[in-house]
Length: 250
Image (cartoon, rainbow, N blue to C red; front, side, top):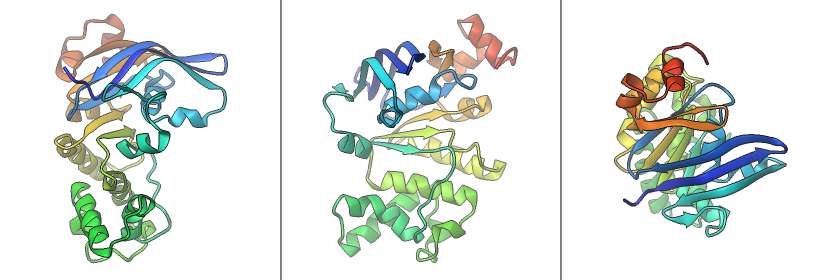
């Protein structure tokens, strides 16, 4: 099977602290994979390895392989190209202090697209895919900062989608949002898997159960269990997984 993302015997250290311990994991294309586990277990660290965000942290070093479409992320792909292909949505919405239109067009302009008609088409496509178009189509020249938190997060997703990545990484994308906005983001994630490969880090186990195809449970830097979401939540193989999902620790 052709996997979209893979980690093979992956280890990561921040200085002397080992944050990932020998992780091997393969992620299928056009799926939603959830990473769960208590705080500090390595799930966000692993997520950030797939678009080299950890490079920005002083003292971080890796051993092992991280692959995108069989190419080694740390050896065979330029960082600039990697981040075009692997988009990232963060926990807190971070729109630029620009108009709604310019937020989405930003990445396109950086990539040399300045044709007005093409920009307008791409911005509309991105906002539609982020389930935001109907709410903002008459106000594209308003500041992105005038949007609600949930709308801002969907705008950030639209901005990520605009450059047409094949993978979208989401680091707790709904944790700062109210329940209604969270439900919209979840519906959106479910829809987007038809076009993108999505990996989501979440503390919310119900959310993982609702949106993901497969779930990986991490504990103290180790991958404890990785399976179909339904099986992992109803009939896990490992006692640690069972203890975590039943609330005995974490």
